[in-house]
Amino acid sequence: MNTELAEELNQEACNFWEAQDYPAALECFNRALSVCNCYPKLWNNRGNVLCDLGRYAEALASYDRAIGLKHDYHQAWFNRGVALKELGAYGNALESFHKAIEIHPDPIYVHRKEEIWLKKKLIPV
Image (cartoon, rainbow, N blue to C red; front, side):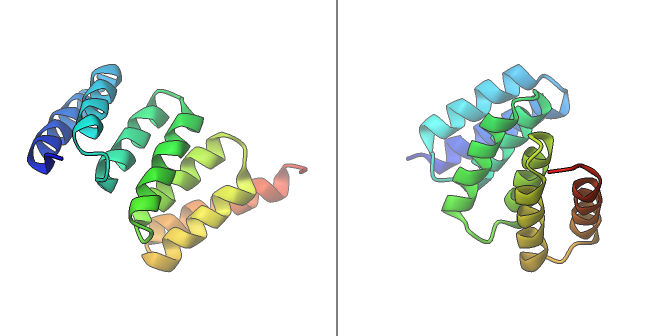
């Protein structure tokens, strides 16, 4: 397990991601995870790229891996909520946003939770 190489690949992947070259970013994150798959930030970042590619179920699996490695990873809980929202799983999205808020009471998280709550109330289940 080479955490230094994984961090270098993470940075390279983030550069691709910022340039909106999502396929290259995903490839880089996958390479980084092949070197060090116990690094929660890599799983979270991979999930973000998958969300940007519209691959929400795969993103959700990446966020779950990140959370499995670091249960109090509020960014991964928040991002998990975003992926669930995109999949139409509003109740589960609310639970994820609530967990993110419980760990780190960020106004952005609160706003997103309220937005999903309202959408859930407007959409018959």
